[in-house]
Amino acid sequence: MNTEPEQGGWFVDERCTNCDVARQLAPDLIGVRDGRSVVLRQPRGQAETGRLLAAAHACHTRSIRSSAPLSPAGDPYPLALDDAVLLCGHNSRRTAGANSYLLRRPDGGTMMVDTPRWSPLLADRYAALGPVTDVLLTHRDHAAHGRRYADRFGARLWIHEGDLAAAPDADRVLRGTGPTAVGPGVTAVPLPGHTLGSVLYLADDRYCFSGDSLYWSRTTADVEVFDTVAWYSIEELATSLARTADQLRFEWLLPGHGDRRRLPAAEMAERLRRLTVRAQGLRQRPTDIHGVRW
Image 1 (cartoon, rainbow, N blue to C red):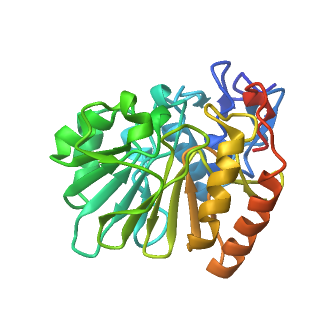
Image 2 (image 1 turned 60 degrees about the vertical axis):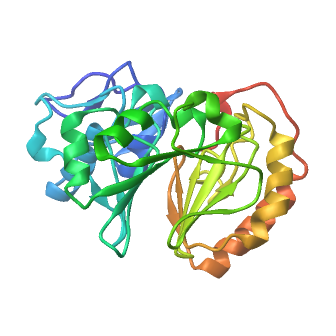
């Protein structure tokens, strides 16, 4: 395993937890071996070095390293994914390295979906894009820094009642299984399964912030659920999909864990339909994080 620098190059140290974040950001440069990320080859040119820097600044254990210390000058975050969504980077140990996002709104405001590690300097950087009005938590696993960011921004903190114990001081509590408008063009759709209070946030018929309910698997080249990591009930997740899949319209799948993907809305809808059928055959089993098909 590539856990030591080679001729001053990039490497992955032994703290790696196999969260997949680095491989999402630099898939041609970082792979997996024996349950950990490894550097497949050294970067060639500025663009590839930039991808490794993005991975290094996102890694929640700071395991992506080179002989030179990380410098703020190489920090690309927040990183634009398109004109309205930015990746926060700086993933947190307290969310198991989950991705978080900024959603820019037409009125100049911004919403944060889940949270990066807490830092006042990072909060100032994110707020510089526009006033952050809401912090939207997809589920309890990603709630760690929600209150601190919301207070720093003067924003409303949202969570579903099923996971309220993780953010008991939330300003807005989603209830039941029906959709709820959280702002113009933004809707919360409860999807119990991964946790009791898991929620999808849909925006503009274009974006789906899916938490840990849905993700894009590079292994299967398809939309998947975490069938080996369902803290509440995989059968309930299948039921939730059957109830809601035909109501979901989006192009971008933006999960907390797992890869992102953009597809035409019609194709994404068809993939969700097929996933809903597959999910009916899933049964709860012991948690196995190493069984995730990244």
